[in-house]
Length: 337
Image (tube, rainbow, N blue to C red; front, side):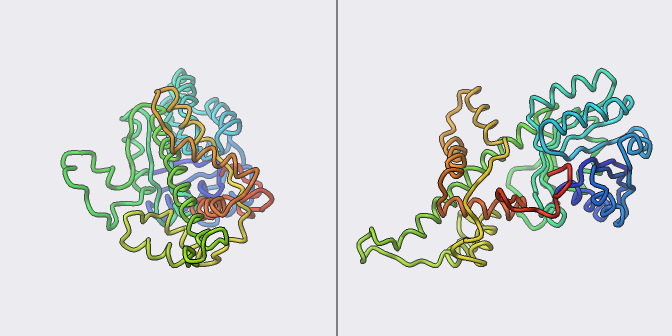
């Protein structure tokens, strides 16, 4: 299947690579960085010099995947590309867009007969190898038409045991992707996913901070323990009820340095945590853990604890996120995150 990709940052470029190598798809690629375009073109993608050239190189009905940071750049790109596409073409937003923006954009594009699909995409910098878990909002017929793309990007069933009593349900879910419902629902589900992620990360961070401080002088000497955090993280990975990919990333960071001196502890939030808390307020749902985790990130920008260093290490591990002042050469000049 042919698809166009706009935005060749860390995730966008790897999505292109997985589509070509895993599914044999033909990808037309565009980014404001000529180096980014050249890199994927060298691996088999068709390069485009600008958005007009990009659209010309796509066969109708076109499918355009946009992988850009949420906000103004995505807004302007969708407005521009919408003016170049025709009826029955599809715009796919795979970034971390606010779900209400999806609904508004879909209404605007629908006036021209252009379809809109929102794809909450989880997988971070490891997605090329592991695949991407996707939560997809849009008209069912349009989503089904794009299924060859989604099945190539998804992780697949792998060696995860089947959940009992799932007979008769959508089998695609076990491959790692889900049609969640109408436009906006994909990013809504991904928003809650990221809110939960905040809470899980905060729980690990606080737990390891308590372990680290079990040897402080304020405690009676007989109550002190000098604990090996790297070994604790490693043993918890193996058979523990709290094992997870986030714990895998924590264990890896602690194995490299049990003090995490490379991390300042400044922890950014990318929007989804705030939107999740706002959704909880709108629905009058108590969300104490998720709210506290968001506020902990705010506090981290004023004073840094070992817990915040754990958070920074996890964020770098799954998403390649850098702290302020650090340079990410792979993202320099790119339009996507």
